[in-house]
Length: 84
Image (cartoon, rainbow, N blue to C red):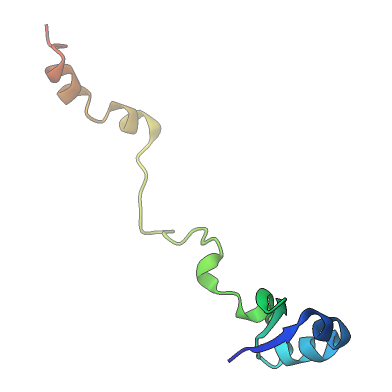
């Protein structure tokens, strides 16, 4: 559960609050009783929010450009009277 502190307390005790975050505790900073910010340790960023480059590597094949560009040409020609 997160600890909630007001803005003045956060300014006064910032290093103590950062220390709490490094131990894994979340700290919420409130202004006029309304939560406005959260101090959390950096290593708790959810991996799902990071870009996943190459996650399908080796699982998908891409045809060469010529073959890809010709896909469906016969069907399209038949639909629009290209056989004439």
